[in-house]
Image (tube, rainbow, N blue to C red; front, side):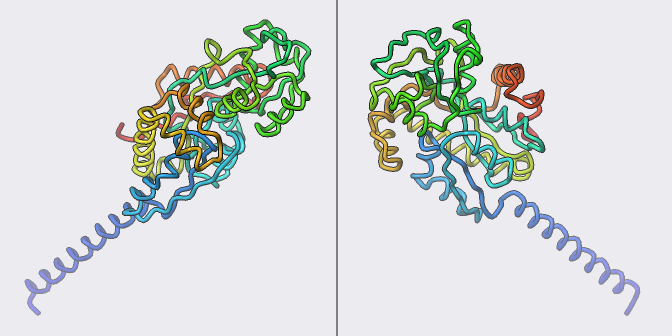
Length: 324
């Protein structure tokens, strides 16, 4: 073989090897961009359960070979425990659970987006025949609330506005279903709670609110993930949020129909769900400085009353997609 033909052959082999490397790298990148599956945590209310019922997310991700799994939780704190543990990849909760989750040892939670404030979606309720008229009347009384939930922070702030603290009441830390039963039996005088449980208490029990969150809390809803998952699969999160936006817009435009659709999937009276949906605001967006600041206020408040184990900086957990 001549030297010329030899070097030509070597160059050809090098070109093939280079192409193989490129193709191998491309295949690896695609594999990294689209995992085999994603597990989303949701509660029995809100846009994610409607998105689950439509199957639209599954359709969007089918072309990328991504299987969609769903996991239901009664409220936020255990959901974010599962997220931190790696059992979930994406979750929606109220404003307080992400703060507690970030303070957990080894936490990798990140904020992806938030829904607008919906302060009217929380209430401190009492039975219809209760003698209590104001939040100040709760002094010395037993109040039910889910520990670490958005309603927990709401209770703290509502008491503060009335010149009270948690030390002025007896707190019963109960999950929503148990708290409702306790209120019905008269085991607690009041219940700090969020929608749809709040609307259900009003309509089914005739409960009345001593106060809503208006002028007291923001009541944002947050979409969260783990930092490693978010950094590895940003395109996937873009698809999920895009489908959430579409679902949100449909709920906003069709609250009555949305409540009927929800009712068939969760077994809750559509009238209850419609009341809750109509006092919620919709449209996920990246966290703005004022939202991050509001979350920091929650963190500082919980630390001051010894409900947070250590100081955190919320901004550290706000995910910033590369290139955006």
